[in-house]
Length: 98
Image (cartoon, rainbow, N blue to C red):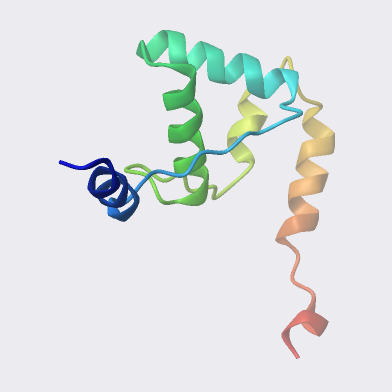
């Protein structure tokens, strides 16, 4: 096959898009690396799966419904602050519904 035809076939074939992401927070980096190691996949695959889940476009989307599970971690959070914050979030402002 002449080179030009191989080149055209390559262009016409749907290619995947590549991204470069900079300034990844340290916690995000460590969580991605832990996930990749635990699941025995590449860092790229772990990042792609996390991105897809977060956008709801992967096989398993994550649904964030409540902050109440955070209250179970008694050593890490101030219970009173969380309860007051959650109570404030549960209040309905009638002005928002006009």
